Length: 369
Ligand SMILES: Cc1ncc(COP(=O)(O)O)c(C=O)c1O
View (cartoon, rainbow, N blue to C red):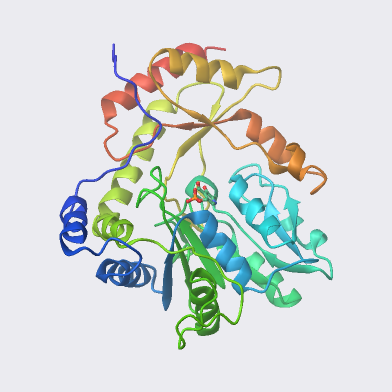
């Protein structure tokens, strides 16, 4: 019997994090200037193969910056999946635009590309695909729609560092992409985010917005309203150390996914995650569906796992069932059904096979039909 709690997620601070942070403290570079900001941004841009990586204080501000740089504002509409973390919709609302909610695919749980075109109006300005839990979205049809209707594509790749679509890394495909480095993400800076783009003009606008709107060539001259969305050198120091191990982290997550697949395969009533032929998964979370049309069985399964010391998370609620976003879309039944059944299982660097077998045995015991 395992008596410790198995967390759903935990950071892996196994490299140069402490050394670099101490260097920040010793050198007095603890605020939002300093060499680690530059080094982290440079390493991140190199990893993705993009021209610009601009750090900021979290994934939410990264999305807000991407929307601001795209010129989204009052009166505009932005198409976002209803099944996502709330920041995707909230940041659209920050700009004064209206999030228009789209249904998800039943198998990848990502925005259903076939349902996007019907949502486009003369007010639509952008589409935000979200590679949920690390499975890439089918980007080519989205990019094609965007080209035909002259829309921006902003990929909210918070959960998809290291995932790829047809050989291209998530974050390197859209006009702008955003990442989160919250403590549960594949790499973390405690709190932190990144906006990436190949477009010089968008990058220049992001820089201005994240620095209070200051003219980049004239100190304390503010031609526009901006924000203080800067990352600190200490956060960037942790981020650089994390990026040095990103391949290791991703390899470990793939091994964890393989182990879950092996040990959960024979359990009835559980749907395992699929991987489309175009996709390389980042396995931010190993997620399953508990199939039962008749009741709250998913919640009972989570409760049982909790009783045995296994922390899990339910899938996100679809945005449209929350009062603040009700009325934001219609025909969103697939998302409602998926959200009721989904569980994120523990997925983190230190998770060992013994724990995965332990989790599988609990699930096998509960899911006897
Ligand atoms: C899909 C998605 N978008 C945006 C965010 C927001 O990131 P943060 O929590 O760093 O603000 C998250 C993170 O939790 C996320 O999962």
